[in-house]
Image 1: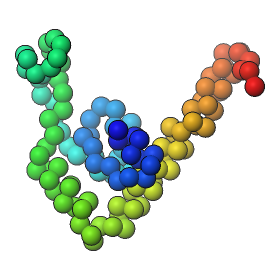
Image 2 (image 1 turned 135 degrees about the vertical axis):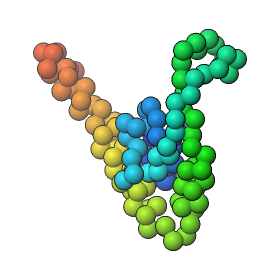
Image 3 (image 1 turned 30 degrees about the vertical axis):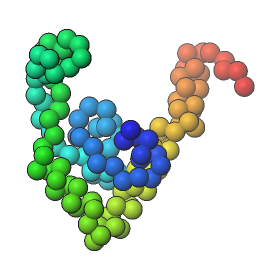
Length: 114
């Protein structure tokens, strides 16, 4: 969901953990700090013994939400949303993926159909 929002130019606040770290940073959105906590028995639909997940820093989240909603940050919001959209289109969009796939096929010596 964060990546799709970024692609659409929507400002994104997300946990600074796992997948979003690949594309979300302080120039493209608002990553919120968290800490890893063990998954307790019964917290998940299936056995996740030994697994951890991210517990968001609630105070940091509240501060971030207030900051992003503040009318005084409209310029920053728009700039980060635009930077996020450029990043998603440039690195993760269809054209970018197709280019990487074609380059990989070429490296493997495979002729891609046109």
